[in-house]
Each structure stands twice: as structure tokens, then as C-alpha cells.
Length: 206
Image 1 (cartoon, rainbow, N blue to C red):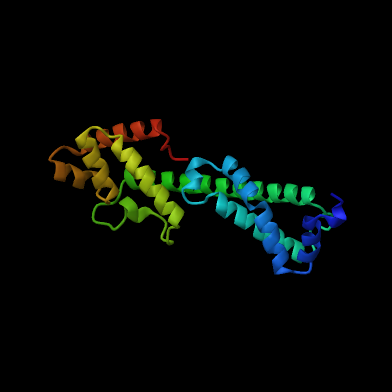
Image 2 (image 1 turned 180 degrees about the vertical axis):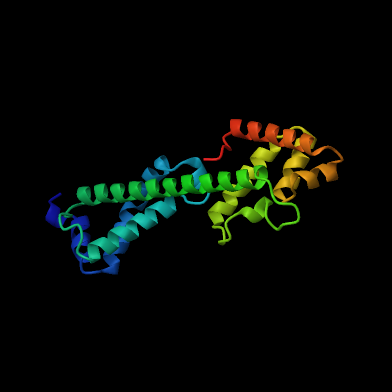
């Protein structure tokens, strides 16, 4: 097919004039292939909150905004348009993966600090109250719940689980010892066992 008569080429020219019908036509023409490509690149953990539809829509919006604003002057046919969509989508996914990695680091750091730092007796510090005061993102909250569930479920000793639960609630070593009717040194040893166990599972303080 001659490029000048290719409908995709015509739609590109029309999109440069901010034609909404052209944008709709391009989207319908490429959406399934673009989502399929995005699905292959997304990590399974990422797809729980950000899937191929999100990636494709975000990439397409960026494409349309760029074309309407005079960017991509070399864009002129379906092949170049498809390649550009793939590049934008890949960059969107890469940024999302970096964001997820940062969220996981924050989750690990928050959980590590809430359990293994020592709150001052009688203070409001310690436990999850040590977490950043800013409102957590939905992604952070979801990741935190997943990590907590996974790590707490890995503690097959009821005493270790009780120690970890009390610490994450903000109790210091002395308070936990009093609640469990044992010595403070015993609590410290159990916390060390928990720390080593969780570090082996990837909860090290990054």
C-alpha cells in the first residue's frame, strides 16, 4: 500500500491537527497489539496494580500529546508510529518498575525499622508510628500488607510471631518481656532470630 493512501498515514496527519477521530482510529488500530507487547514486559507483581491496559493508555496519551504539540516531525507512516508506540510503552513500563522497586525498598525499610529499632519506653515512637508521616500511596500500602503477610507467615514459632507482632505495634523490649513473662535479654535474642530469618528472605535494610 502506498504510504500516502495508507489510512494510518492519513490519521497521523489529522492527529497533528488535534483531530479526535484520528486519535480514536489509531488507538483502535493498535491497542490490542500494544497491550500484548506491554503484557510481555510487565512483571507479575507490577501487574497487580498497573497492567498492560494502564501502560498502553499512558503511552498512547503521551504519543497524542506529543504529536499535537509538534513533536515527532519524522513520524510519517504506520511502521514508524508502531515503533514509537513500542518505545514509549517500554519507557513507561521501565519507569513503573523503578517506582515499584523504590516502593519495595521503602516497605522493607519501614518494616525493618518498625520491628528492629528500639522504641523509647513511654514515648510515642516505635512500631509503625516510625513510618513516614506522609500519607502512604495505595501501592505502598498494598506492598506493605503483602510483605507483612509473607514474613509473618514464615515465622512458624508462635513466640517469635508474638514478639514481632508486639514490636510492630510499638512496644519496646522491656514491655514485650513483661507481656510475655520473660527476660528482656530473651526478647532481644528472639528479635535477632527474627531479623536473621527475615534477612534470609530478603528483608534486609537496603
